[in-house]
Image (cartoon, rainbow, N blue to C red; front, side, top):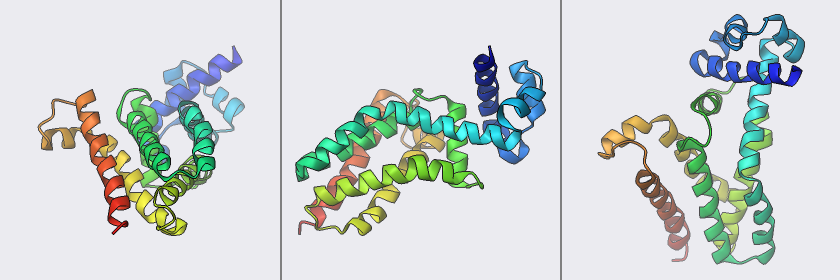
Length: 212
């Protein structure tokens, strides 16, 4: 029963934080939407900041669950030291994250809370940075370095990865605008494939250009 109440409050919190942000969110509204006494927020989470922290940690857990297989395979690819495999696997990672941020695999409320925190960091941003964003950047930069045969210094790889990674969230937060601009009838599998081809072409451009 306790876990059920906590889950309901957290689900309600995502809805409230997605709608009003941290500063505009109301613990009273969170409790009311969950149909649970407001004192439960203090009991389970220690207050508004605590339930927001729990929401960010839940995002980390959700993404890590979806990417667990890739994380395991990443170690195998790194051990092979194969440039072609690294290029291929980097594209797979980008493909999975594109699916996560643009499809319905993750709820719109969860995605909006992440996007808001990513674009306008709060004091709790380090939860996402340390446990999710930085590890993903580290892996992608390492893959790009390996895929380039060492031609791109590892530290420089971060500069290439940052815009690639950030584009995923541009697509997610500007979905309607992009679909209208490209004359797409909403976000379909075909649209996702086109977006992925666009991102993959940038990976190829970076690596092939530096071969010259």
